[in-house]
Amino acid sequence: MLKRRSIITGAAAAVLGAPAIVKAQNVGDWPKGPIRFVVPFPPGGSTDPITRVIQAKLIENTGWQINVDNKPGGTGVVGAANVAKSAPDGQSWLFVFDNHILNPIWTPKLPYTDSELMPVMQIGRSAQGIACHPSRPYQSFADVVKAAKAQPGKISVAVLAASLAQVMFAFMQKENGFEVNTIPYKGGGPLLQDGIAGVTDLAVSSLAVMMPHVRAGKLKLIAVTGDKRSKAVPDMPTVIEQGIKAAPSYSWWGVYAPTGTPKPIVDRMHAEITKAVRSPDVTQKFVDQFDMDIVLSSPEQFAAYQSKEQEFWGKVIRDNKLKPE
Image 1 (cartoon, rainbow, N blue to C red):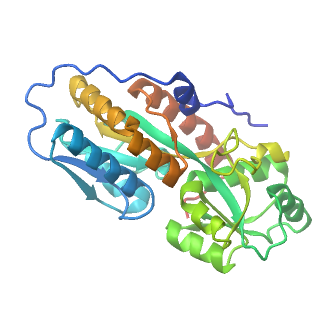
Image 2 (cartoon, helix red, strand yellow):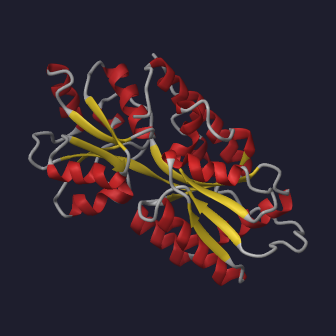
């Protein structure tokens, strides 16, 4: 059986470690003009609004001119390539969602390489939720597994294409001996629309996006995917608590810069983003709107986390011969 190296991954360790603000060094005359925060997705979702909240607080704190530049396409590949090929001068920064670290595994011939982007920090993370249409009979994810064993392939599950959710379900099926019909979607909007309409039996997304529909009674939450219960729904057991063999899985948001960006500039940006996110109003917004555990890891912690996650989930992708769509 494939085993997780540690239930608490690098991100969780960063949370527990509560890293201090990195001490910034002299950055000379940086920034030289407007700074770009590239979001490799269209407006909406979670990455764009999180980036814009940080942008606003940084402008307030520093007076810098910062523009959010949406460059969607290819599950984040277009925007990532844009920053990877940008000058390493501290003027371009990439804000990503968790699927970013899987792209090199799904698509070996990317227009950039991992080595062209340097990890700066993980901002925070949120457990994913598994929900079903209220008309479905399932009261827990354990009920789903039991039904899927009785009727392999009948239950449909909506997940984002090329996402951690898609890989997580492949892992759980193999480890627990059940089979569902996993349907990859290109966007979170259509995914949830079909879940709410009952087109699919289950829908998987970050709790941040799912919870408004759960509270409205349009979806029925049956599990969360973290290593502990969510503060947003403390009565909802995790998948593991329900007796299912699984690896904790989180949606998360992070920042990268072009490799070669001077360390003093990276340290200054890390310090300013940390200060912004730790501002009480920003922290409260991220917790309330995105069910976010604030992480604010160091570049070294984030790089180690990326490496472990790619190794673990990459093996799942290869072992199950998964395709991103």
